[in-house]
Amino acid sequence: MSRYDEAKQIYAQCGVDTEEALNALRDVCVSVHCWQGDDVIGFDNKEALSGGIQTTGNYPGKARTPAELMADIDKAFSLIPGKKKLNLHASYAIFDGEPVGRDKIEPQHFKAWVDFAKQRGVGIDFNPTFFAHPMVKDNLTLSSPDETVRAYWVAHGKACIRISEYFAEQTGIPCVMNIWIPDGYKDIPADRLGPRARFKKSLDEILSVPYDKSKVYVTLESKVFGIGLESYTVGSAEFCLSYSAKNNITPLMDNGHYHPTEVVSDKISSLLLFNEKIALHVTRPVRWDSDHVVLFDDETKEIAKEIVRNDALSRVFIATDYFDASINRISAWVTGVRNVQKALLFALLQPNKQLKALQDESDMTALMVLQEELKTAPFGDVWNEYLARQGVAADYLSEVKDYEQKVLVNRV
Image 1 (cartoon, one colour):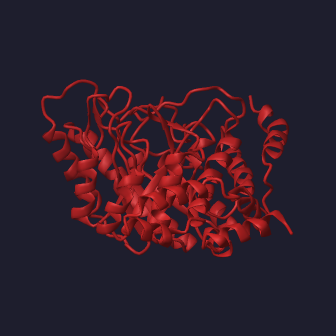
Image 2 (cartoon, rainbow, N blue to C red):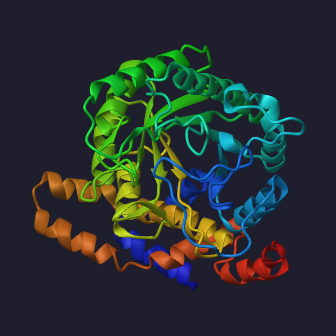
């Protein structure tokens, strides 16, 4: 009997069908962020990162060109099981001729990415890039009191909606377009309402662009603070949730964008009650929004449990969002995305109906005991079975190191 067969029997004794879990995970799509491969630099300009975003480390081999980034994404994809999408920022536009400003980008500037996605049978998600640009004035974009600045970024947002619809039409897969702005103040502002009123006005103008809502899901992401924006951020959680609800767009939660004692896992059930769809950026904050590589840790598992136990796999857009320049970037991609998938499988291997029944019966003693027993169930054997069925090796470090020696070390 194989280790998987033994694990299958053990889980069956708990009322869990491992085959159902494996089949469910096979159909879950994770959107993989492109910006891990080049430290969030992009291709449209060479401005330093801004808006509270920071990458640390100088591990050799970061992608410097579209061809290098695509090759690295291919390598990462080959080591990540299951369904995937590509998550792009607007700053990754590829210009064959004269570059244009972000307010004037068009679908043609992303044709190479569409070709890349279609050849691999994956969809594309998209993010307007409201940072690292000369038109970010005094840390403000869509909330700027300077009408020239605000209008520039409104034009950028409108352009991104058109590009998102292009992605969906070309790939045949809906595009999730996420709006996040870094706007805020380092110290205590005299006016909190004004910037948020301007942000609301800007979003209204962006969303005035007609688009097919079955093809493009516009999401809005909040943040609590950033470096240089410690005292006030315009796009707070309250603002973004309220705006999303009122305007029938999709709320997006990044689990690094809250106070250190807040957890996104506790918020998912509330949002599911009031939204057809919700979206997540999965990361690992260490003291703040530090975007560390996702681990198979307690909060990642709790996030996955909330999705699974509420039968919401088809209602939650799951994407990764982190960047670590201190370690091999391919390994960072693979480790983080696999850990999101591990967490989902762990959640799928829980007897959720039985656990809920114990809670409803107020048998908290039995609930605690069963939850603790499940922590030492042979989860790893089921995960390895999933990798084998997906044709992906459990040991990816050797392949990553081989790619590093053959490809990455030659980038100077």
